[in-house]
Length: 258
Image (cartoon, rainbow, N blue to C red; front, side, top):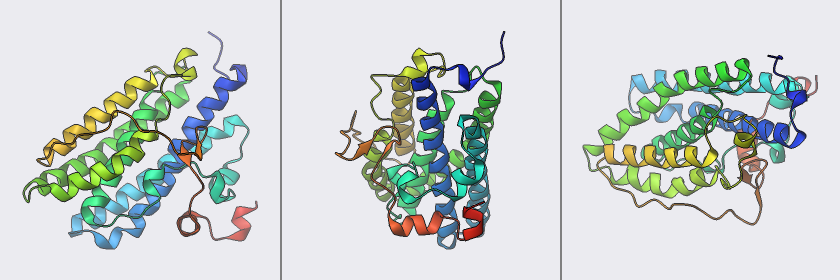
């Protein structure tokens, strides 16, 4: 069997693969900064340690994906350090800051579960490097999801209403991140081992489970309509706000222009 080469892919398929990986990487980049900014809101000493650890892990995921995306003609420095707010392809779910601890946990869970669903479609990718990276991300994300599940069980002790409300409000943005699942060129080309539609359905089932763990039942929409400014190649609407971009961007001008 000939070695895997992105150069051998149909250009449209290669572009779709690049877009999906960048969407996950940028979501992890923003999420890592969420953990850092919200660190002081932890409810106990173990929370501080957990948030610091999860921040380091998801930023590591972002950087590993940026390194892989060098195969598409990018430079690592440009991806991590030199893009503007309009080029960041993170999930719209993370654009608005959390309003409470329950909202924080719900947002983290939705972002981690959705991004894991998307990257899990590459667990059997023909490039063993990408398949191995997806597996590693899954192994580490498992503990982040367990953390959220642990808090959901705690929220259940007081009824779980605030957590369920936050899940319900943020869920449409997470579901919309999957985009149009009717066309799936990556699955058709053997680049995604599970159809995008099936991954989206699995995501919805997992959200129902964590709501039940919190003692609540959610009526979740089956689909959402994208906004007028939806960009399918970035899986988001509009650019990052100036305030969020200021948080995530590299501040060293020399680092931004190697």
